Amino acid sequence: MSVFEGFKFRRVYSPIHQLDPRVKFFYVLAIFVIAIMFNQLLPLILLFLIQLPFVFIAGVQREWIRSLRGALLFATMIFVFNFVFTYFWTEYPLLPSPSLLEHSIAMTLRFIVLVESFSVFFLTTSPDHLGLALEQSHVPYEFCFAFTTAVRFVPVLAEEAQTIMDAQKARGLELERGNFIKKVKNYIPVLIPLIVSAIRRSLELAEAMESRAWGATKKRTNLYVLRMKRGDYVLILISATILILAAYFWIFYREQIPLLSSLLIPLRLAAA
Amino acid sequence: MIEARNIHFTYPNGVEALSGVSVEVKTGEFMAIMGQNGAGKTTLVKHINGLLKPTKGEVLVNGTSTKKVSVAKLSREVGFVFQNPDHQLFCETVEEEVAFALRNFNFSKQLIKKRVTWALNLLSLTQYRQTSPFMLSGGERKRVALASVLAWNPDIVILDEPTIGQDHQQKEKLRQFIVQLNTQGKTVIIVTHDVEFVAECNPRVALMVQGKILADGPANKILTNRDLVAQASIVPPQISQIFFELSDQDLPQDIINVYDARDVIIKRLEAST
Image (tube, rainbow over all chains, first blue to last red; front, side, top):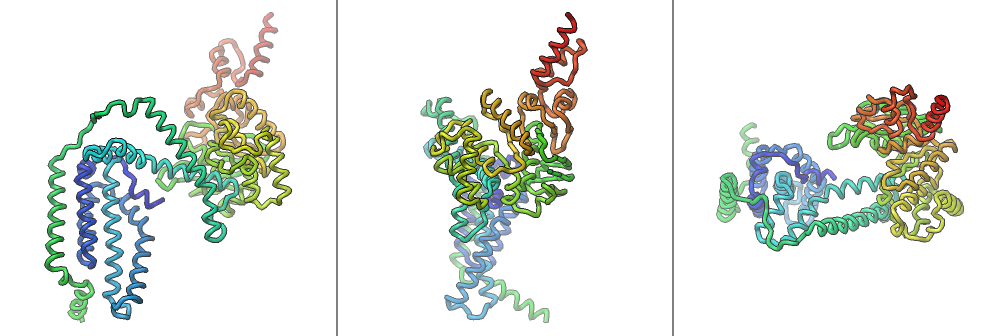
């Protein structure tokens, strides 16, 4: 559950929260593309650091750290898999060398950068804003509504799952008992009530919406309209600059990006 | 015997739901926990079967700390009926639903059959034995949930908001049922907002406010205390309101149910004629 905590929006006001979600999405996309472009440690560290001011301006450090902590398990897995598999199945130097270590760390960091940027996006964008952005991008309203409703009900569903688990535990259900197949089976008494109640709730929601004349007007107007402000242009500029710089380095200097471990060797020599 | 010793509980999101609760419930006692939403009532009772473990302090059930045993084990002694039956019903038939917990507790086949028949009979659900629980009405589903807990005959029964969504007749049946359980020597704890229901049962009442127990005592003393009731955001029972309005008539102030009120009024009328 802690992974989801790191993506849950809380209504706070900061310059970042006020930004247009479309612009923020462009920023996330830029980070995403750059993270995929490079597989060396140095640029990925820079990419990680670039986002920190963003997090601090938005004032979501605590939630952000929680999301990173939630991603820790996957990050460890990625590190171990990279380390073990590149060690055995490629023509990398056979010994666990610093460069192999660095490669594995880089792959892990790439994942963390992706989680980081998406987490910041969802932490600072309200579901309503997101729906509005979709709507203004000419996505049919039915889809926008379905999307915002889905997002809106995630915490409700998570809470309900917890209650159901409690109720079944109180009837002697032990979720952690048995072998793997038994463990999966143990979740049936949790899943069925959860699904049934989700379906029931969606029917109720549909009825409630129809009784309030949902879809009566074909041409909808909004109380709030997203308009690009100065901050939005600044962020576009920043994202575009980072993207262009990254592309420039990728095209011309891709092969010359030094390994951090090779930078460390002269330092060690100097010290000695 | 349930003992809570100065327990504190903070949810993972940082909300402190209990801040120093000490309470002792003797075997065979009937207790109602009341208070406004978010006062910590449900959080407190979830400590009794170990669903929640106190962050500070400890809860002893028949002498064992809830920290030392699993929820499944504690549940053998503490039956907990949740507020919404839809949160637990999942089997194809009512019979299976009632047998679910018994299977978890490793009862023998014959015993399961016997206990299921007994529990269905107890809550007049025998005719629905082979029906899907999802086909039943709200009140019936609630009874199935109750039957599925009572089937293993726990010594302590906790009911979270048992009266919600029940019509008057069902409530009256439920009340008689709870009283019956209690006379059989079971410890019964209910969590509720329903002042009139509590007034008619006349149990021991604990009022909770902001994670603390504000007052604890017999219902006719607690529910007629204007200050306490106001602090816990509870409306006193209607009978007690009438008697309060008539306070210049020199009537007793600790009357909360219709039967006592009738006796008092008749006595007064007889005296005046």
